[in-house]
Image (cartoon, rainbow, N blue to C red; front, side, top):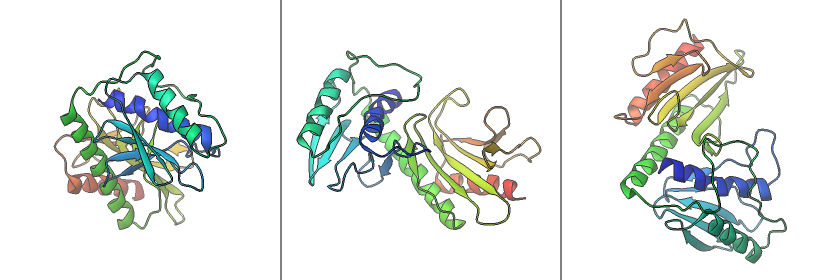
Length: 248
């Protein structure tokens, strides 16, 4: 289900690319997550508030225009049919640009017109909602604890929930933290936090062992905590301990 949701999120990213002003940090492609609705959603495309959402509960795309929501169930729907539906939604809206499914980054999987979405495991979807909720709440609380300012967004390329904030002091330190999907570093969803000076990740090889989680220093430089069996308090404690190591 992670792969299917990652692929489905690309329709939202492509809409951001099609309709929003390009940003140097690619933030026009990133997505919000609604804890209340269990949805990923784009930034508004226009002053009318048109936007595209991905509803985890329904396994469906939702087009919002003039306070009206139109829904496309993904189960049994092909990639080509999704594109046709989105283009119909755009035509019925007051958007002046066409929708183009063109991404400027590579995904770890490919999609063809004949690819069909299948709702294989609704329990897994519920679990993925819980993961996104936990990550957003934990990141929010950590940022508030340290009076750090950052959006919390889902980046469609790597499909991580992430935040990035610079400390308002003389250190020049910035912190990136979030929740990543399984990859070559960890076969489970995992929380991460890393420190930066400018664009350079800080070396962690001399940091002492963490109470929970593990330091990495090859490729990714930072701390990682697999999500299985953790709660919000554990996640925040992990962020806090790693953050303290960067500040010392």
